[in-house]
Amino acid sequence: MLEVRRLSKRFGGLLALSSVSFDVGEGDVFGIIGPNGAGKTTLFSCLVGALRPTSGQVRFRGERIDRLSNPAVVKRGIVRTHQIVRPFRAMSVTENVAVAAYFGAGRRRGADAERRVRDVLERTALADVSGASAATLTIGQLKRLEIARALATEPRVICLDEVMGGLNPAEIVGAMNLIRAIRDSGVTVLMIEHHVHAVVGVSNRILVLNFGETIAEGAPQEVLRNPAVVAAYLGDDVRTEGD
Amino acid sequence: MKIAARLLWLAAAIFALAAPLFLERGSLNDLWNLAFAVILASAWNLLGGFAGQVSLGYSAFLGIGAYTTVLLSLKDVNPFVTLPLGALLAAVFSVVIGLPAFRLRGPYFTIATIGVAEAVRVCASTVEFTGGSSGVRMPAASFDFNTNYFAMIALAIVTVALAAWVKNSAFGVALAAIKQDIDAAEAVGVNSTRFKLAAHALSAAIVGVAGGLYAIDFQYIAPASVFDFRLSLSIVLMPIIGGVGTVAGPLFGALIVNTLQIKLLSMPALRDSFLFVYGGLLIVVMLFEPQGFVGVGRRLRRLVHA
Image (cartoon, rainbow over all chains, first blue to last red; front, side, top):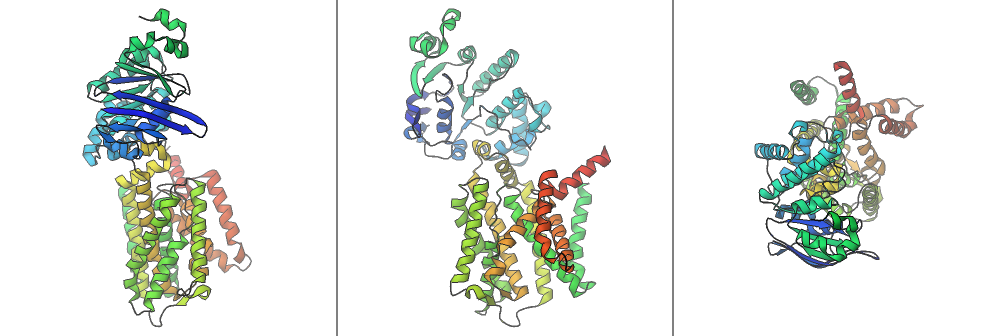
């Protein structure tokens, strides 16, 4: 469904992504892990067209999308959330999500858009604060608002950038359930996450990046046993906690 | 409240349209000036207020409209027939500037618009067909005060109504999202360039028509009058003082600035100080109430209800 081939992104002297290749199949939950500065967020930015890759290709359902603008990619059905939340602070929660319903792949208007917004707010447990200003939300609610806005664009692929960062254990369980529900609704999920156990819990495939390069890719348990991954990122304690 | 506000708008429109029946020429002139200011302020607000793209180059559109009207009238075209063409030329020019300038953000965009407007002024003073720096005069007997008065009032009404419609439309939602966080807006599918260009073109077209009406009324234009940078400044000043990004703000701003100007100009001691007064007003607004006059009104309403 999504094919990434030899994707590179250079910022001046820094090679943030170095010839990264992988495939994501329809219905996958595809986890992306790696230390800070590994190029994970840059990868998402290149996938959705927020950044133009220096070289390489991204194909979505056969069509090259690596030269398209971010809004054009959204209209084809790929959307991302922001690790550092970026709500429209002067708008209510409902209005925030309505922007996405209006201008996403669904391009809904009027009562149709309202229905979509209500539905998304229910699914992301934001219905109770729908009228509140986005500036007044807690971090957990803001993370869900990011997801809600992304879902309101009616994506086929959703790229979640650390939606569990800053959440407490109970909220993390809620977020994992939400991700499974998104997958079950037929949306393919890519997720960047630092909580390794959460990624392993919901992903069926995992990609590990370090310094912009792929150091492992495959089924979660297999990847976690990979010595290069252990050395680069996870540390010894994970091996003992392991399976 | 909603209905009361609508009735108030309607009353203001009817008053302005019926004014020639009971007001004398001097007061009608003041109303004409006010309508002109409301048009410029409301039109600027479409891009500057709703989308947060502060342009200091609107004199270019006013001048393009004014010159289109005068130059074509000299070729025996009916002045009012030239207005749509002035609007079109201003809109096309706004897109030509906008394509490169909208790649810039915040103050960089603003500086680019100053540069473009100054370049247009210099061009208009240099090239031959505009009459150079000495300007051009409308053909004799092309002026009828009443026609021009109604045209200006009608354009003001249309502009304010259009602003209200834009604010509540999907277009307005896109502009609001762009204003608050352009990257987040793009991330949910808002094509920011397209919407900024559309808002720019719409406001440029309106200002272009206003420029044509200005030329018909004043009968004489020159680069120093219609392409003046101070004009661009006062176009920005009005919506900011009145309440940037609101529908009523530019109207209040135009009213406040216009009244102040008339008062100041009538006091010999303060004649030359009006820019000083505007500057002070601008600083006070930005420090204490970024929502301007409308923001003060909202605070008072909250106080009353609390």
